[in-house]
Length: 51
Image (cartoon, rainbow, N blue to C red; front, side, top):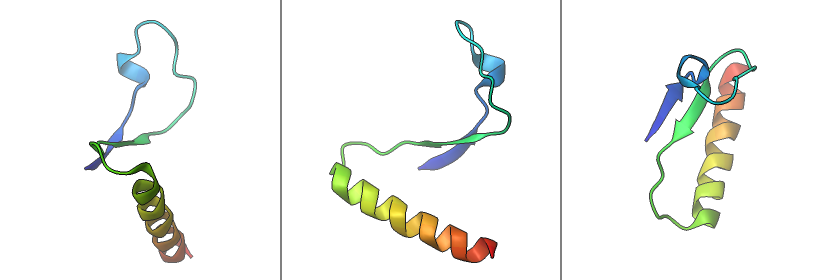
């Protein structure tokens, strides 16, 4: 599962100085190399759509 997150309002110990959101990945116990390969494919597709 992937979801947008904005950590700025919920930080209590340190400040979040970056504007915007981040993508939080809930990935479980999959093989790290499989995850990296999946992310590379996903980001390549995303970048093609942005052009």
